[in-house]
Image 1 (tube, helix red, strand yellow):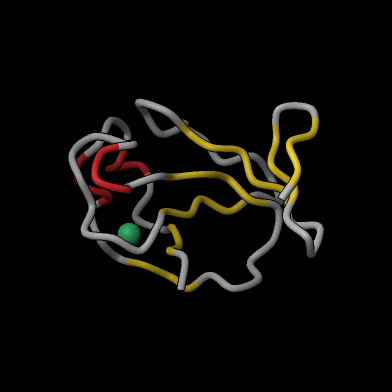
Image 2: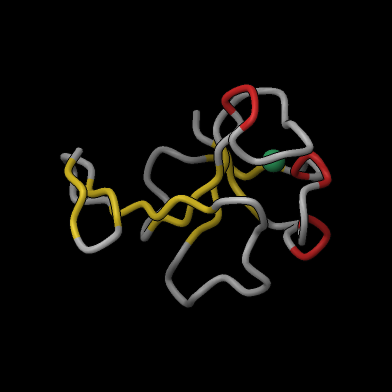
Length: 83
Ligand SMILES: [Zn+2]
């Protein structure tokens, strides 16, 4: 994993940009909203609950949780979680 121009780049070329405090209102075209596979917390960054945008859907699976109820969670019924 390398940090380049504000994004993390995994060895397979996937770029990930972490989201802090609140979820974006819109997901940019070609990006996927993903969270870590832990019990969602009401606050991003707490108890290992992290969220990020990545540029492909490799190694992620659809998730139907309420994103812990974090800010803008209701906008993202469609999102993914890390395996
Ligand atoms: Zn979820």
